[in-house]
Image 1: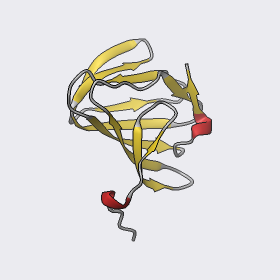
Image 2: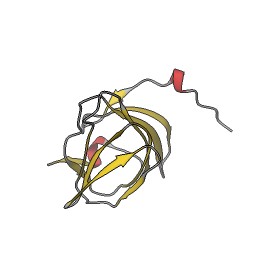
Image 3: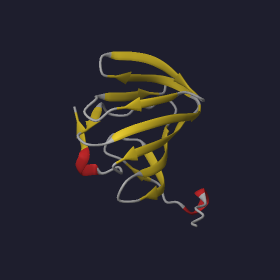
Length: 114
């Protein structure tokens, strides 16, 4: 068993511009909390090999997945297949927070900015 406390996690910025706190990173998967700040956005990007699950836990925003753009809010979950271009916008004054599960795990090398 392993207990991870958020207060002990160091934040880093991914290539798409979101702030990440990684709870777990194994050879098979990773789990992180991502934050898009108030009035912020991520860079449009895709991952060559990685499938992502976004579970929104706070705030609201807009997401582009492929050719589709839609609203997202706390409680929503989006599956992003490998190769699918995506982007998040936070048009509010509160942070947009999500859990991001990646398989295989997140890697800068697997991220392609478009």
